[in-house]
Amino acid sequence: MSVKKTALVISAHAADFVWRCGGAIALHASMGYNVTVVCLSFGERGESAKLWKQPGMTLQKVKDARRREAELAAEALGVHQLHAFDLGDYPLEMTRDDKDRLVDVMRDVQPSFMLSHSQYDPYNTDHMLTTQIVLECRSTAQAWGHNPGQKVLGAPQLYLFEPHQTEQMGWKPDTFLDITPVWEKKRAAIECMEGQEHLWEFYTRVAQNRANHFTRNSGGQGGGRACLYAEGFQSIFPRTVDEL
Image (cartoon, rainbow, N blue to C red; front, top):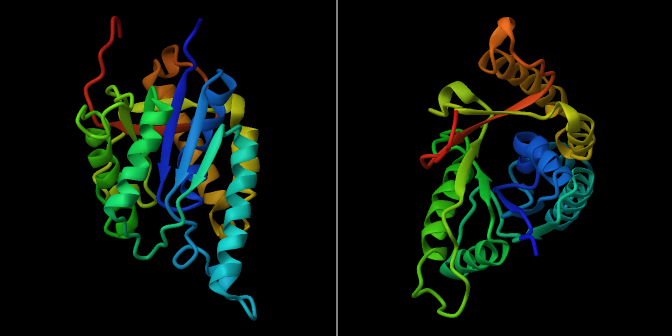
């Protein structure tokens, strides 16, 4: 009996998983992976300006709208399961119980790899905190003495997806993924995020720019693989390979 392949995305806000790794989600879902997404918040306070400009808007109405956007985007990408922790944003804060909840998800999913934010982001401290917590929870999930009886986590790679202002973050991609075959799914998910319509074309251009980098690093004009859309990632841990 074959073991189901899995992946886990931890997103600070409801839209982050769409902009930054929607292609990776859709591509791996098409390859048979069960991709689980955790949204720690809906981005209701800090990333929903368009909604807040509407008359009579309330916090609950914004959260409801962002939840629906995230659910539609997850469906478009083929997400296996979407967890909404609803922890609030700007600032995002996590208690010990919140962290243990994330540990439980990691152990339940047993991901082959995980995806989250860059380690440094002075423009959005919610992002920095998320990755710090992900690394902490990854270690906890590996500890045999934490909730004995649960299956412990192995050692999944943590890939950091691209931040918004890349040059300011110390983020250095070492992995490029061709998402051309699933680009239409990512674009459909992007358009689900109606509260941040101003970012639709921005992240389309990011994908096109990374496609150029994919082509150059796969052999360049002398034999590189053609690519129209790609995503870049930075790996945290050494990768073990049998051939390059």
